[in-house]
Image 1 (spheres, rainbow, N blue to C red):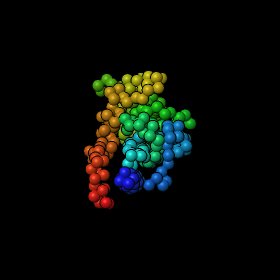
Image 2: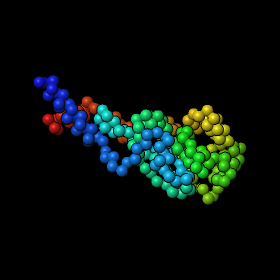
Image 3: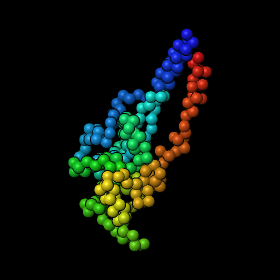
Image 4: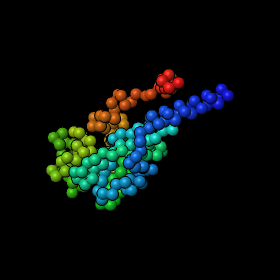
Amino acid sequence: MYKFFLYFVLTITYLGLAKALSPTEVGVQYLQNEKSFSKILKDPSVSVILIDTHSTGFLIKTYYQKYRVISGYDNIEEIIVRTSREYAKKNIKNVGLSLFRKLENKEEYLPVPPGSHYVGNAEYGEWRTTKTGVVKWYFWKAYKDFPKFFGWGKWRPTEEFHQQLRNSQVSNKAFYGVAQEFGINGRVTRENFPHFFKSERTKQINMKDLLIEYFKENF
């Protein structure tokens, strides 16, 4: 009898915590994997940057990702989607990277620094030699806001960056920059997407203390 009662209490506790810790999913779209982006985003030209990722729920978790979506040349919005566990785990280190791009109906899924698909395209900018002799990419005036949209800050791509990017595309491996400037451990990402790295976001919940507190309040 005692075991049955204990099982009943634990079940009620689990359901209560799961309800308390999981937000409503009304209106939130579901992303199974990278191929699902085209079902959610219909624009002919779009770039998707992962800017936040988290999970909710007790024991049974629900995974969410937040994206900065750049459509065309100046339409910026942020959306939250629910994802599969596999896709969330796959991209845990890819905050600050572009996970999906579509330009002229050509789709790309390889995680790379945002805006990489524009680098080297003469329609959008040109290579310039700086005073220090380093060749860097700069956008034309019409696209001067792109670095801000992409979260580049003062960073600019170099010819070496472009070459390593092309090598990663050939080998189909995620690319984090010449000096790993992008991604969850990247300097550029940390400087330009600071919200994700706020200390209060990384605090872990002690589930034992949470259960004790829950029992005190409800039993």
